Image (cartoon, rainbow, N blue to C red):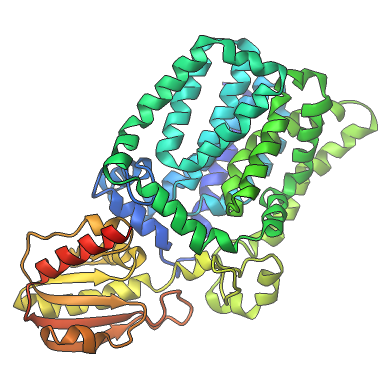
Length: 505
């Protein structure tokens, strides 16, 4: 084993350790994580909001025990592997130990720590983009057809993980066409690799067709409710903050791609970045959608800096370059992670507001960062639902119906009673068990106005059982309604409602 690989292993160890200590125990899992975990119990080739890869990982997590350890493990693993891939790319670019260490520090002490904190498709998305870029470098350097087919495999898996990787193709195909590397399109293996990618994603395309192309509805809803609030200036500002400790390295990488002779064959990477970011801006994408593009450019910049700092007085700047990512990470550590209590954060809101961390997807500022508020109140909700479920289930089957996927997923994850809560929201609309005759209903509502009056008439008894009281939770005030002794056929009403909701979508 190379001695340098011992340093790489040390980076991997530190990466895993950091991912496990950056979340304070008083926080629960985050809203989206519950949905992805529940998908592992309903394996399919597609879902209303995401492609299927995350469900496969969720299935594996369940096999391993469904603990928080394993939920944290996989995003950390993908983050660690991203460091490994950039390390290997630097070796392919003829970079040395300084370049590898500088890039690894830049990746380690960056926004990837926050991204890899959550169990979502985003961590694997970064790894797959970075791997595809590494494969491109390998192909340009060797022109071996095997790299094209590896590219097809990676891109196919990328689509099955997160449709966001389509921006990579949209940005880099024209970038290749406007440079000398356009000759890649004369290689028949390019089209062979494209067919391979198509075969990989074909089951998901068939699923999308069979279910009325829900991805189009999801993107439309996302655009109307979230992306419309995206400020393009804020998007650009965030690009400088994601890898703040090595922003200068990325800038040197852009310069090197334009003017550094050893990188001449890779010049299309510069134009690929410009076109891809322009597309993100045009479509008002969320700022973190673009994170995946940067790791490889940190590699370019690190190799170039190593070259220009090799001789003379400039070599004394190497320690400064190495220390900068760590020094700039210290203030970020104090703000970007849920490693402090909500009370402590609220006492220092100005610092969070300064970096736009209190702005939610609705475009407004709130007391806590949205991700942090989305990690509170879930255990409380599940335990209170469990209590009422135990009481009602003595008199018959009880349906737990929620307003949103976060509520349903959290109840299913934390419940000690084996509850299978559902919702008309997201994928849960396909997971109703209509084989049971329900006598009771627990209704979880965000806005409880008139619920007792409107639904209570269909039951013998109706009460407000409890509510989420955590003052810092996004779900604060969510109410648990209890309805006992149905006077109607609940299954029939559910079937009618499911048909109506699907018709609207």
